[in-house]
Image (cartoon, rainbow, N blue to C red; front, side, top):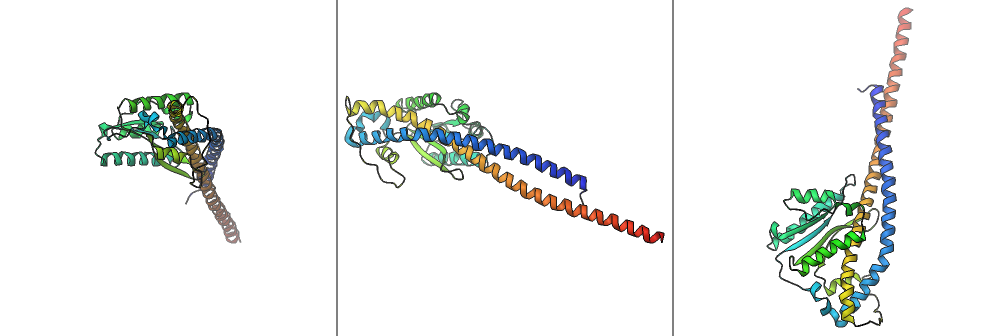
Length: 299
């Protein structure tokens, strides 16, 4: 049976851990609010861009975006997979790696080998997993996992677009975690290129799945010219939006993990305190029995 000193040491240890988990939860909550604010500021602009894009494509100007909408036989593919740089966020990273592995499995079922799949890992945890799976990461984008930047996101998007238009790859897929709420993160597999008309219309749907009303735009100089300029900007914006979304999902997962750890720690602390009180009561009882026994012997 543990001594009172050993139980006290356990209580102090658990208290110290609780201070850490509580502090980490507060930090994650603060970062989550900041990330949600960034997404909230971006969403109206992104939705408006997609609505304009959907209207231009449905008006018969799709041929202007042909280089980004070209469907080709699948011989090579690229996957942009998002995770985090650090742990202590529950199953966030392991789930992200699992969904990436599932994406690779689907391509292998279509006849592609590992040499035919190019991987762009975002986040150190994903980069490590990609290397262990036998892939060579394309570049170092770990910084983007912590600090999403539109400049760096657009540079990555430009590289992906150049690879697609240069026929280095026939399809580019995004594998990331969507932050639906603070308690719910959803894995997403999304085709980045080629852009499809259905994909543009889906981006223009509301929460009820209904298409938003058609806008009466005056387009200058012509729809095709506007589409040639607009489509690359939408693709740049998409990578940045996914970065913000995945970053928010990471902070939400860490906040929930630290909340769970704090709750478990409090339960453990209560059990240890009960054990301490019982042990202390037993020792007092033993001392009283010794005193009473000594008194009786003396008499």
